[in-house]
Image 1 (spheres, rainbow, N blue to C red):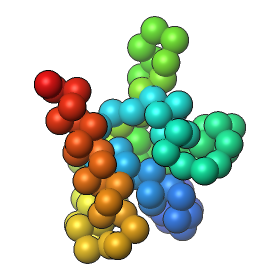
Image 2 (spheres, helix red, strand yellow):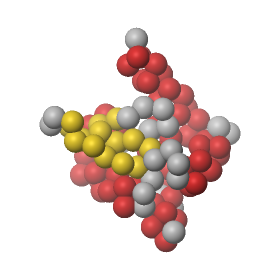
Image 3 (tube, one colour):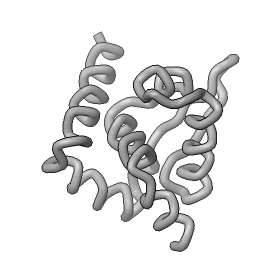
Image 4 (tube, rainbow, N blue to C red):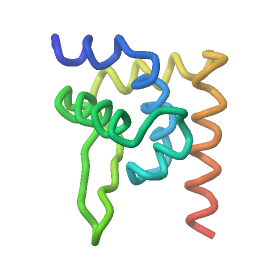
Length: 103
């Protein structure tokens, strides 16, 4: 539980969770959305993965990240993102990415 609270204590990591709400994304896709370095993105994703909030899967040369949907913290975070002025647009952008990939 300590790792979950530490992971959620960062606004950037909460934003990353919102961005992963509907689509699996590579570290590069996530880094392109946030104004931080790729090594910093990688560190944040490692914290989220160590907390059990995201999983990673290597596909070819890319590592794809996705939410762990059954984690209670992700469920609560998703609920809060619906009204959060910062996270709601990221979640909507994630849904648009998922929709575009299906087309």
